[in-house]
Image (cartoon, rainbow, N blue to C red; front, side, top):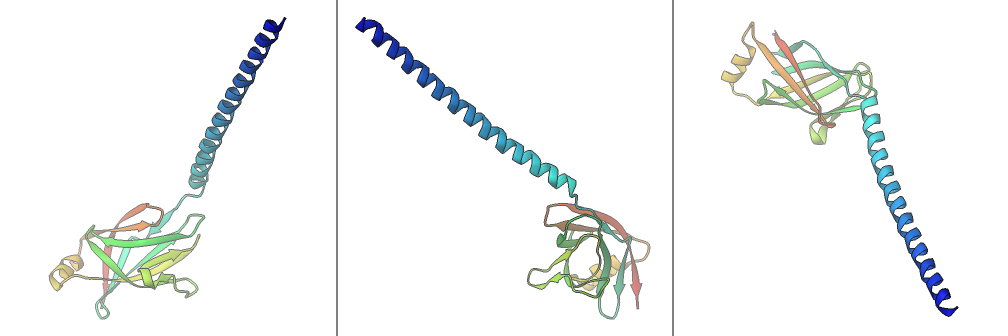
Length: 167
């Protein structure tokens, strides 16, 4: 009779250990599933709030001030930060000013960046660090140029523009 009782206790230990192992596996799978679902939800929310930046077709240049001007509109649902602007893929803009329709500045001066709130249109004034020869080539009539802006979210927006010179 004593032998039978030891055998039953041994079987009871197996059932307990098996239950603990099954419970640990279920918890691990639940945690992994929760982490995966959070990642999918974050990705979905990012896609539901797309960044939509529109650039004007014309880049204005003022001969007196040697400053370019372009209009940028944020049609997205969130505020966008413009990290930098390039002309023709090689001339980086030094942003002088960025003003919205209400006359409010949108320039982050310490970082040479611009923020544009959702639905807002901003006029951006910038200079290029180029010599006179490069500037003449850029300003030559009947040429198209490419403006590229990069946002803090990592998106790049390209637009073919013409330059209108204002004397």
